[in-house]
Image (cartoon, rainbow, N blue to C red; front, side):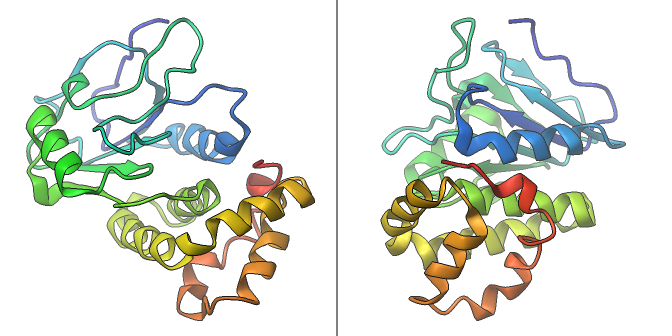
Length: 220
């Protein structure tokens, strides 16, 4: 796989780590590709080689998506083609004034965040993630908000992403059973979950699900 080349002037870098056949990340990859085509944004599939971006002072946000290691600072499962491997903290050197946003499971735990901070050079307070399991449909919705509103709202919507994952996590096993029954239709699954849990304070986060349902179908 060719090395990642990040254009100068990039402010938002979106790194994906999943295999093309991994359906649950289909909406995430599609949204990242669309965002990557916008001014000052760039999308790249991780190519397996370390990347030094410390001198890119305009780089403000780096978002890494994929399967997060439960007990390791790692994003990606090594299932991409051409023997690619997961992203680890030593694979990225980033500007110390930037944010690292880990759109994956478990990477917001203190131990993982400390390792990401040490490896990338980003202060621990700017390494953001979720402490437990996350749901790819919610990750897709986070990216859809950035598509709709632009990168300036990244921090707000990332915080909302963390919070709604915390709320719905006890119901993830049920959600995945429903996905299997309805062939991955996120809107139908969300309706079923809302019969069991009050999601009203996340109406802003969930508001794009209907408009962008084509990103959210067939995730299982």
